[in-house]
Length: 388
Ligand SMILES: [Zn+2]
Image (cartoon, rainbow, N blue to C red; front, side, top):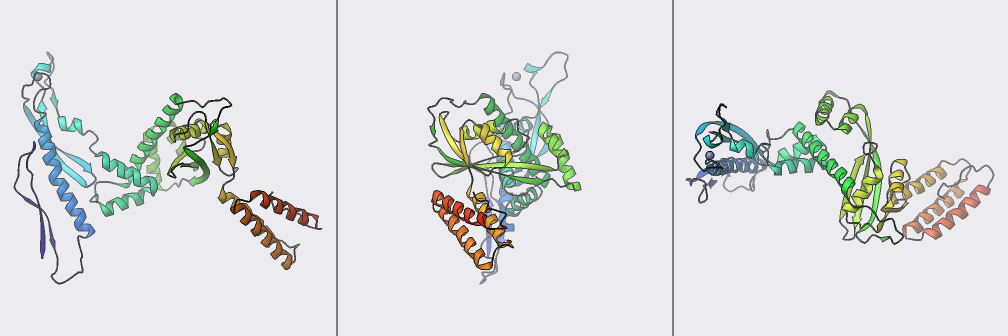
């Protein structure tokens, strides 16, 4: 059997057309081998429909641009060029007519000007949706994988490249950064009075950091040039440093939805201002305070201590678990303990951890103190559990 998909235009500003075949799908009778449209057929169909629709839309729109905006007289046609528009469903070639500027705007002694309304209207030559998709997926995946993913599901074979995805996310990053700096400069200021209360919108914020490596293969030298093109001061710095320390935070809002923020440590003018801006943007009022959960690494210790909206800092679950693990490991490596003693200490550590996990922090601490006291009293025993 054959499935024939046709498209035609009717109504509106575009010229009505007869049906045009946009796709023919052939399937073997009596077989379920190719059930439904394949990915390739889906991509081709979307690309065909887009290539059919976009020129009709631009041609229809051009009709509204043929008269002078000042005096209403019709403008003379000069010539036409073909321009390429990038959309989520592929690159589309459209005709962009050039018109002679109206005599009512002509200046004496100046050569006659021409104008290209379509080029002016779509000067980026890319639809916002495609920019959004590239930025969104490149924020979640490596640029190359994000590009491959989009190419696999959409007819974007030549429509996007690794480089364009990277440039897109760098541009989005710069715009976000500029917006945050404007917010810091002009945003609300925290109340410094005594009358502060726990935030009702943000439950807590968890902050952690990680090191990222900058490789120096030829590909990334191209990346460095792209960064340099952005001409932002931090981009210049990034090309010199081979490692960057990323600080990332996650706020849990009262309706349980998360909000994220991140920055490169040392590349922001003020980490505390950044944290406060994030909390304000998450809905914290100037007289509210938020508890921050983090480990005690220096890079955000300063951010939290300097922040005016953050109240205190507590260790997060992950780092608490790490401390218990380190204590257990130290027991395992101990040469001064007999095997039966080691098992007893390990069991004690597990119990202490269980107590923490079940909200019985105080009981856990007293058990650990008691265990430490017993162990430290022993001859030849150098270490405490380190849990205190
Ligand atoms: Zn005119």
